[in-house]
Length: 132
Image (cartoon, rainbow, N blue to C red):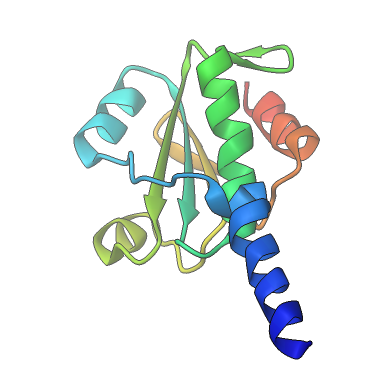
């Protein structure tokens, strides 16, 4: 009986739960990051780690916004979004990120927002709205 419960738990965690099944990839590139800033774009960066479901939730909101070209009524045409695996120490040190699910927003080449663990679409929207 315990074996069945354990198997069901892992199935739910890694197969059924949509956040774990999301493909994560590093899109951060220092040259593109610098270019986006020099072009006057608002730059959003999120960090993740392989096993993190809250990272996947945060990325899902931001990837959907990038794909749709908007987050609620904010157009993404002047916003560039990057993500990276927090175990990549070169990027983590460059951005002074120590934890997964760190969300950074840059405007005019300056960091203007930093949060840890924020996954709620409405709160991410509010942060972007304040910057724009």
